[in-house]
Image (tube, rainbow over all chains, first blue to last red; front, side, top):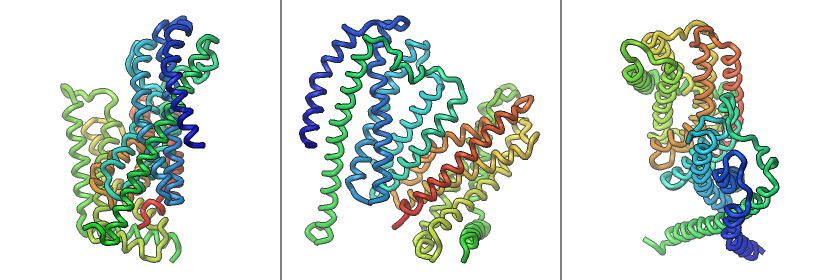
Length: 225
Length: 226
């Protein structure tokens, strides 16, 4: 079942990558105000959604890890933490390019932008802790992920007091009919890609952990020096 | 022993250890004062203070000085492995955590007693126009910092390169607190103090503190357990 889902996702990616590019650049209508610049929307918004999916997944997996102390939750948290950094980087870069076209500025201290940036910083801190914290750092990283999750609404409301330039969430609903199809296909594409990446990364993390546990039990048994 | 007795005993222990050597207080206060001085070299041009920089300087000094004290206070517990002794003693983990956090909050408040008048003096800032609002802002900000900082410093006790990782992990979580603290202080410094903004940010600090006390109490035990 899991295997089937994985290969289905690979198939979806293989078909949709070229097909969405064709749809977005040749079929979808041009935006009335932003013209060709609006095309980045089809990549920016799905990636932003994946950023939040991976952050929430990382927070929940960390919470479960602290509760149950089972290594598999930690593997999932590690994988989603790294993916959050990846998707966050894409979101910030595409967002800046879009901002330059729409507002004439690369960066604005707007609520949603600042929240995403700080959320991304928390996740970079998470990856740094995992990489350089040494043994025992996975619990610290789990704590950081939980604190980071609790922090998100606070960051959002504290920055919201400054003015908001970012388009409201209703942008997706107000899309022209011709834009909706490519957008949702692009969304599906990135969801499938997220699924592939998280499955592979979690498997790699589990393999690393099992190897480490085997090594430790080998040391205990006196097989290794 | 009742819960509050336990907490107050732990706080008193930390304060007594500190007042014997005064190591943390002296180094923290000196470091914070140094930061204020460095900023004053950068932000005073031709005898005039650049507009609107005072709240940022004040909070940067508090947070940097506070981080120094935070890592030192927990290093002290690590050096002779007294954290293990504390955890083995028949006190609740919650009491240990609160005792540590309150002790650190007291250290930072002492440093603020030095730094706040210094900022007011060097930059000619009318910080003491509404002392009760300034004190409320500083108290709530300091307490929130001490609570979140104690969890992170305690978690980092057994990891490598903890001095580097403490600010890296702590500061992104502290951002809302710093925004609220600086905005409230900035409201106090305006020609006509902006009371609605100040009250809003003080309430925001209260919410921040409440949320993170709950999160800290919920996670501290599973994070520091041996």
